[in-house]
Amino acid sequence: MSTVATPLFTRGTINLASAGLGARGIFATDEFFGPLSRMLADEPAIYKPGVYDEHGKWMDGWETRRRRGPGHDHAIIALATPGRIRGFEVDTAHFTGNYPTACAIEGCLQPEGPDDATVWTPLLAASPLGPSAPHFFDCATDALFSHVRLRIYPDGGVARLRVHGIPALDRSADENGPIDLAAALAGGAVIALSNGHYGHQRLLAPGRGINMGDGWETSRRRAPGHEWIVVRLAARATIESIVVDTAHFKGNYPDACSMQAADLTGTTGDLPTLVTAASMFWQEILPEQKLAADRIHTFDSRIVKQAPAVTHVRLNIHPDGGISRLRVFGHVAEGGKT
Image (cartoon, rainbow, N blue to C red; front, side, top):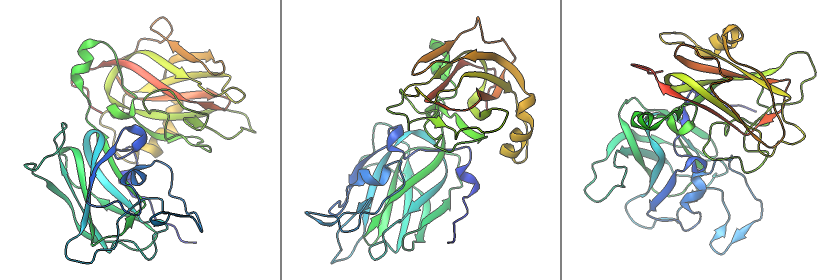
């Protein structure tokens, strides 16, 4: 079975079109066979053999009816937060005889929502699509965008649209107190981890976890040592407090946690590989602390060691297990930028 190589732009970015982070579809020319909301789901698309609804075969994605005249279909998506787009994934999973032949994508920065006067910026020229496969496209721009418009030619279905990018940090929020620099919607991102057997994508998501599958959980460790995960902060910053939430983890929460940090400003090369090798030697800012089941643990400045500004943190869990959310509160340093 062949696999598609994952491009570099998927590393250190988040899916700005994630419904779980707050993205939503606001317009589609047609949703006859499948609503636009399905295309933004976080879970991989599934196939249900023999399942039909009042419109026809049930498909996990956005699907329009067959066009019988000129033109094409399109949809507008409000991103979870404005950000800089690094690339797109247009996945036609399970669409084999009903996929579009091509797609194009445009963007705009209009947080209050686009209107008829909105000027759209081309981000992806019309590009071919094939059946039941992920299609990756680079996006070479540093501009900010709040919405994207996906055009499909001429009609058909798209299982998932993922917009890989880096959120724009609202630095004015720092004036009102410490901000969560690990938050996905601020620009925090996981860049390396020792084990993510049961998932890790929601560790930095907003809100508390809704169940045990909504966080980071490792497989059971059968050898000495412990597990860890490295997070790039939204900006170079000084850290004041750390929150580790074990919501819903009751028989599988870690016994303890600790944290290390480093300032990697100016570091070049393959960062995930570099931090995997070097992060064990980073400065300790949170000594090992006991954890409990299904609880929010707050470690304030009385426990967190004061340190110079950092760009990355490494959360260690001893020996293994799962946590729902990680929050790292602090203040952006002078000229702070990761």
